[in-house]
Image (cartoon, rainbow, N blue to C red; front, side, top):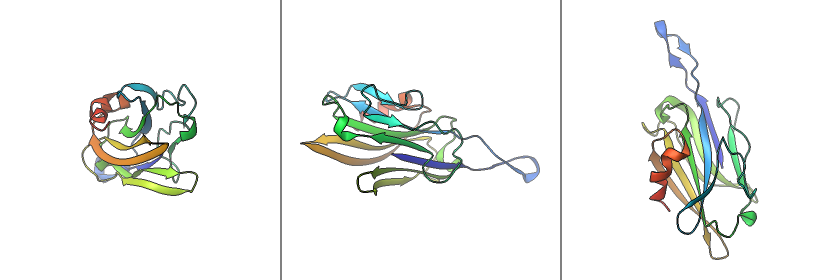
Amino acid sequence: MGLGWDAAPRKGLFGRSRPQSIDLDASCLLFDAAGNLVDSVWFRQLRSRDGSVLHTGDNLTGEGEGDDEVINVDLTAVPANITQLVFTVNSFTGQDFSQIQNAFCRLVDETTGQEIARYELSGSGRHNAQIMAKVSRDGGGWAMTAIGAAATGRTFQHLLPAVAAHL
């Protein structure tokens, strides 16, 4: 999963623009077959307990080109009791997506380099979070379901009731 954004300048006194601090966060939530949250990978826990999911680090500003936060998943190493992975995005600083420039989230198949899902978040509404996608066990492999549901919350914990509707 890749997440990128730029802070839109805020209008100050006399029409001057001033930078604002915007911190978006990418999370991956690991669920079992009963829909119980087993583990989570986010800015406060950069690695799943089993090591199959790795967050490359928290970007607090969105500075730089391309993906500002990345979560890598080794699907071959995900424990058998994990049946669903849900990817979410939230604004930790609370701005909604109308206040954030060039915001996007995407899922990429690293074996092929193919982007398999992408959401343009900027201008998508007055919400400050999104349930992006779900990757579920499907027979001997995995299947991806695009979700794109608007949500509200500053961390993934606030999003859990909305996520439950998609399990």
